[in-house]
Image (cartoon, rainbow over all chains, first blue to last red; front, top):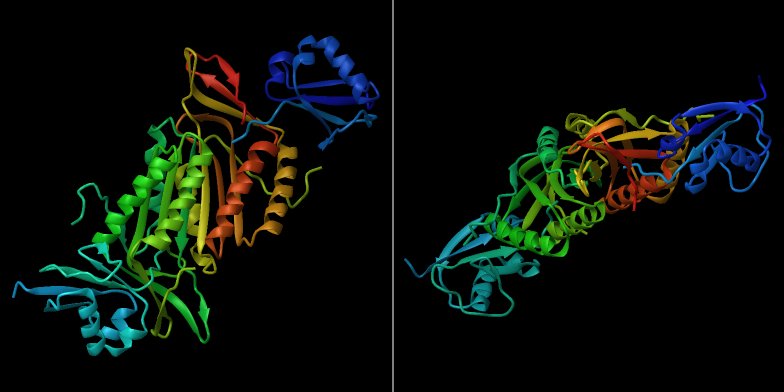
Length: 79
Length: 79
Length: 147
Length: 147
């Protein structure tokens, strides 16, 4: 159970996922997570987004810590 | 009587003149007016100001029309 | 002398925050507007030697100021894609902490609103025949100078 | 995760003009201030093909936005001589003609207030994780894109 991580989808990504959050078993790394998400939501592969782990932007592939909160964020459009 | 003109003093010039307006006989030209005013208010010669005749800025010496309204204006300090 | 199209910009005494709010609220019906830029001038309690400024007493060559403001308005509208612009300047006594200048520009896009507002404020300070007499707490005075 | 010093910037729904007026009025006691600069974002009734925008529904990665806003605030204060800065952004539904963003900077001199406000607005638009869903009058939608 504590090996789970939370994925949060924002903006137009929720049109694809039809949900805001998802709890899944930790796949280990960011690239493994992305593979898994694209299998579940094929249209994600056409979407532009950045990833944050526990509120820190991800620059390159990296391990995902236990209980991490992962955010998938399309380009910002505030204001 | 209709040969008179009105002089309006603004800003710090009123500290020198102790009045806002003055009605005088038309001295004929701007430079003659300035001579006359400096005789009456010697401290005016130390003051920086621009002159407008009937709301138009005066660039060089020129005749003063009858019934003109002359404004003596120190540097602006609005806002 | 004054052109019929010159709008009055002068407000007797300070500009109340409620006046600014009303002005903002009136723009809710203009749904092509995407951004508003506002500049507010506030009277500072400057310390000059032993003296502290308590208020500024504003006077103006009113008819000339309104003519000039009309020219500035036309210039600003020709230079920027604005929906509207409103300018108010106090005349008479404005105490420290009170608002003496309110410039309000609105546009479809933020950049024109911001640039027009900034430009207009500079022109108001340098081109409008308005004078501020800084009244000290001991009732002495000095004349404000713009930089 | 969220730093204790991160102030909330989010307002549920539109930002009322009265809220802006209260904010301005509160600065009357700060008599070292000479100039305020305000930017207001207003929701536009854009026409997109057959559809007209009726409202924008704003969502955010709130904790991340507040952390980022804290960074932006520190950067702005280190860059400009400001007395204070206030930022409010709507969350949830804001109808056309209503205010969704309120940025308010104050300084001794106008130039720092204006430059800081402009800089802050740009950073808010590009760096804060906030999304606008443009709701059409027929209840369809598209996602807002900033330029």
